[in-house]
Amino acid sequence: MQLVREHTHAVNAAVTGLSALPSTARPFASVLAMCRFLNHDGVTLPALIEPAQDAVRPAVAASGAAVALLVHDWCMFGFRTHTRKTDRYQRSHDQDLGYELGTALVVDAATGRPLGPMEFRLRSAHGMVTTRPGGAACPPGHIDELLDAMKASRRWNLDRPLVHVIDREADSVGHYRKWQAAGHQFVVRADAKRWVTWQGNAVKLSAIAAALRLQFRNVLDDAGQPLVAKTQQGTGRVQVVETAVVLERPAKTRMGDQQIEVPGPPLPLRLVVSQVVDELGVVRATWLLFTNVAAEFDAATVARWYYFRWQIESYHKLLKSAGMNAEEWEQQSGEAFAKRLVVASMACLTVWHLRQDDSDDAIRLRAVLVRLSGRQMKWGVADTAPALLAGLEKLLAVVDLLATHDLTDILELARRVLPTLFRSG
Image (cartoon, rainbow, N blue to C red; front, side):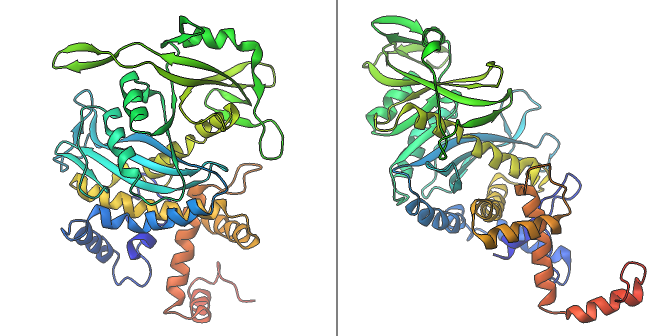
């Protein structure tokens, strides 16, 4: 918990270490203590993530949704110049060096609220380190990690069935068939060039979307108003249309240097086409979604679920640049780096849950933390996760300081030494 408190901050490229609390005798002592902790053989990744998992379980149980979303994504932490890290993974070219993180993040299917990470997998040149008890395989590609991750999720004792939400890199006929055969529910963004059987004919998904363009309807939010989504291409109303398709083509896989076809049974799926349309009627984004969830969850619900996927990208951004600046961490092994990521994730989880708390006390606390952070908010934005992290860092430091020092004595000392800044009265 001391390490979690010392990671509760938002840093920049020049300041990437711990925030040593005032009670620490020397700031460097915190760094040494962390190094010993992260490199200790008795400190395991499965044990480290247990507090985060324990926080997710009651949050899932309290959700008003019939299912929970498990969002999967990957993030590369670049360490091209960190030559002391001898186990850096080369993803593509010789300058693309670092560690690749696979995250399984639980999201509330009703509200889109991120509830917390349940699993991390970190790929290094030495293989895969993971929070999963018993370890995880290190297959050649991302998508090959998912079936084992889905199987592991059934042992997490979550109080809802899981729907796995994944971006377009998981669009694979062979993997769809394996997931379906194993009884896993999924929502995956598909490639517009994919061929399917539709109304008895072989058709590209892009052609189906064009044929259905007059049947789109608005997705409504909880207040009954059109749901508005922000994308990189612009902001607009979310619209959907749905149809049934069948995947009949053989899967493709590599055997050595050759690509071979693997036939399989026809796979009926629901195709949900979702688009974001601005005020002028311009389509800013289109998502083609394959899903095998029951028809009781309508197309609008499926589209909302995929839109909630952006939470995992926000989480990775908070780790990489907007909060923890993890690409500047100096841990010299993938395992130590992964352990620190778990610690940092618990600090992020604290802020996430605070942002989703609508109680009067939580609203007041967020306002206090923003003031303590010194950050300027955009018009109409009450707070951001980096601002709350920065404010929480200062609040923890103040509370820690007041445990050993009297506020009146501190102010009197400041007035004597710095009278210009601290005037009496």
